[in-house]
Image 1: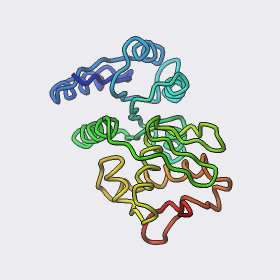
Image 2: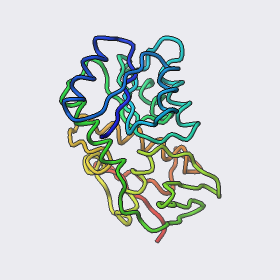
Image 3: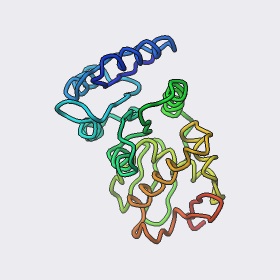
Length: 227
């Protein structure tokens, strides 16, 4: 059974999430603060973490960073009352895979969880690829820049390989959103833009003037590998 860890200090909300996730067939564990969440993951890593940011003691940002620093790569969905773009960018930079603001629609949340789990399932991998000083190693789910791990999150790596699969052709925001996140709603396309910005920050020599990860005006994005 797929195990989901819900990190939420609001007992009523945590209980409601547990009930609905169990109805969907998930095995659910609750953690009410950051240290408890870290201990739970270290004891038996879940398939996915739903993480509140405003936790007592160790906040969600620090929990997320610690998980990624320790090598845990399961999808993490942030569920928070914080809604500013800066909050979302900080979450993505610390390794979040999705960000849902409170109040939220239950059906949408369940759909996003299912999409993240689908994306994390084992897949047929691409062949290794190289462009410039960047090496993409799909078998290891790692991108190297000048021989060093670029530190891509799981969703950033999936976005990079989605661009690679297109062989230089344009991927629209909606196409990339559906392929990588499993979403199709136009209101979510900002998620793609944020992750593209992070890919550029980690892979491009000059993120403000990218050489490889290119914007195609009024269309989407494409990867120019020089081939």
